[in-house]
Image (cartoon, rainbow, N blue to C red; front, side, top):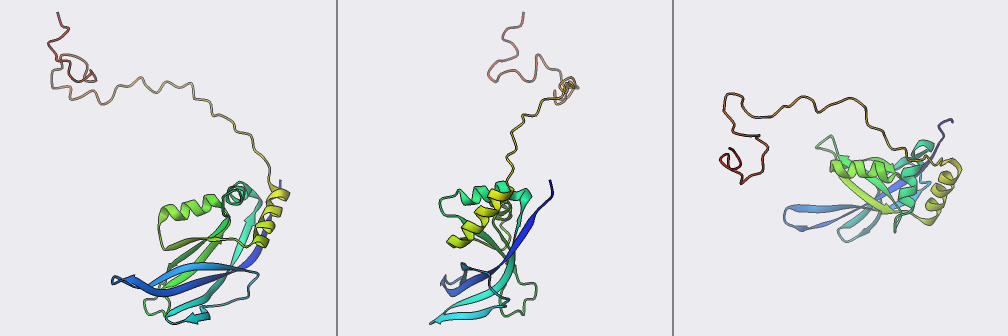
Length: 188
């Protein structure tokens, strides 16, 4: 079966608001997605006092026929969302501290990024049209694979006894005996 791919540009909207603690001057949050958006680079959309929303970037949302299981997991969640990953800007003199690098619909790929904890990672609710587009892709390309339990090898792996303690120290019994049994009990 051939690997199929489709793509859609997704605009990333980021909100910058004053921090609530003295340790963080600003709070950054990915707040919205713009399906089919044109190119942008930190274009200011709206300003209310010190709070500013930016169209930070437009990234491709790639769907692959090999990842439909991850898309199904995303679509079956209570509130389906895309995971957006922003990394710290490489240039410390950059006017914006974040660089958008990825948007994904796969719950499994998203979990990998969440586990890494590297950067700003947000799950943003999907618009209804995007849910339908991903659902149509999954319906067209998902192939159910049956679960096959792996059989154990016939090789004997427990024949070498390692970790039995220091052979120079005399042991009255097995070093794996239950605690509380002294070496004097049960001998004789």
